[in-house]
Image (tube, rainbow, N blue to C red; front, side):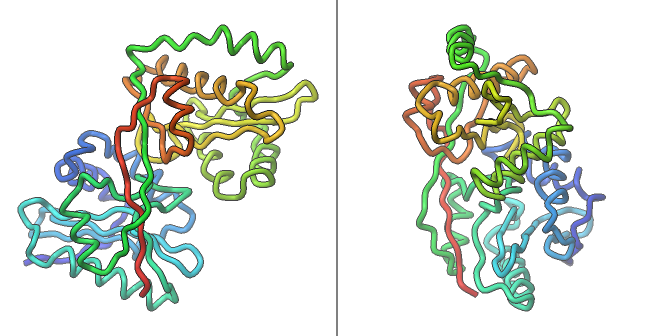
Length: 299
């Protein structure tokens, strides 16, 4: 008989196996370490907002959410392929929705639970999941894109960027732990708390995966991060001080991150939740690799 179990870190490896077996477009990307960072390291995470559905000793479903203020997010959900269309997914969703509503939430969003998320929405290629959400009252109407870069086929010549930065008296450095407070304040003031918290997650990685630029006065003027959202090899967020945009500093930060990933043996980079598609295409030959739909439901 099917039964629920509250999600704890003891189940990370089993959850990883379940996701890799049932999310065919992301097989092998659900590492226990990544799941821990995106779920349990989220300061808003509560164990009762995540649960697994078992049939005897086999995981056949998961439903994991998070609340921020008076709104909720579906962070990860799925049903074993052989157990779909039997009402299990709907029962799990209703259980989480009722819990969120009892806690004062008035709206639930789909997957883009920034600053700790696995995907910036639902990958539209998961047709069953798309139909499932739509049939349960979710309005899916905002589309965003990821882009991929083949790291093995590109050398990413940094020489021109190096000369440019030198002429601008700008330097790039890997963010250091002792600069945490300074950096957090700058990003918060310039870009908001969401990007600040998201990019500071780079400090938790070894090596640190956030880079910054400084001007001749040693003031921070730009940043770029990778491996702070989604799966391994995800690039973003990134930004440059408004007064210095258009000079090539953003390109230099991007190349620095791509080179770092390449040196670590990553086969590809996935640029997450892309804004300027043409910039990434013209700069590093990035191609759109996935489209995600965002949406929500009033409860």
